[in-house]
Length: 405
Image (cartoon, rainbow, N blue to C red; front, side):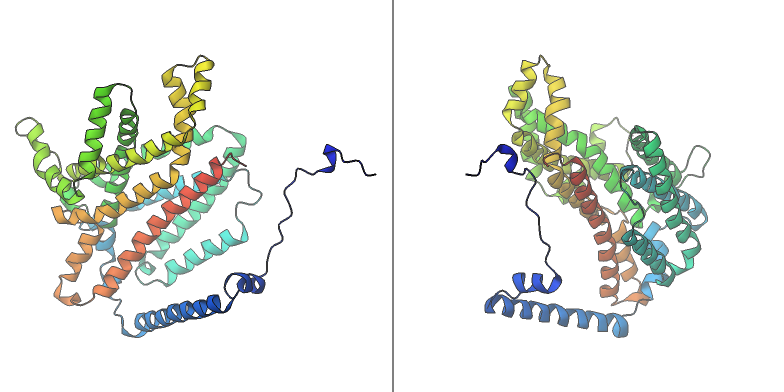
């Protein structure tokens, strides 16, 4: 008789056999007659749309509107003589992005894999071949090289100094003030009026500022709504429900008109600052609900275990509950950040020349009447790139913080 012992069972998971492309297609796309018909119909529709779009883009579309106004799309009416500031800011961002990439990938076997090298090559080819970026290719190509060099340096520094990630985070924080100084001037630089801020620069500045302000405010509101103090809980709930019941456009107009009423006579904050405050206040209400959902998903036993160890409430919240709640809420939080970035398109309604507003002003030029498809498609690609980058970053963070396996 065979004796069965605990060692007879392997704790390793069963081996997963990968399917080839043909076998995968048979299993998932052509498993029966209905799936086969549905696959053929969907592929046919998408193929027809792709062919029509490609034909329009190569034969009918008039793309001159993009290279002729590329500077306006990027910086609005920012003085062209001060463009070196924008390039310096781009260099700072590329350097920090490369450092962050290298530090996060310090433990991978190959930082520059074949796919990464192909991606970098495609970016360089795009810069050289795309008409709007071709005139600036001698400046943009070194930026790509800077990202790669900084990534290699960050990987080495990350292996040698394990705590360097905190300093990189601090550098990102300080880069915001460096960007504000380079764009607005002052402290030795020629001041630039906010009336000249526009295009993609203004969109990114308002989005980053709104995200930086709404996150701590939303976190406090989420904690306040779960507070044991009735007054704090009622006030937090009232704010969240009130703001969520008002459209963002109304808040933007109210911010432009009402914020000066709460300040001393004669004080009138910059309209960009008022728009950022309105964006932050609006997004904080939605972010609070996302964080509250994460807090509710943390098992109650975590609090009880912390209390049994003698930890006080702030320590339990900061070291045990919040890290787990924020990890759970990452998809919803990043989704709210993406929504805030897209909501910046409403700033043109209150007179700010952000990216979409610049596009509308260009289309008002008699020389480019009727070029709606070209301009809006170009703007859609820009918004998609940044939104997809945030989505991809959130997935990488989730993989990095995944402690369940």
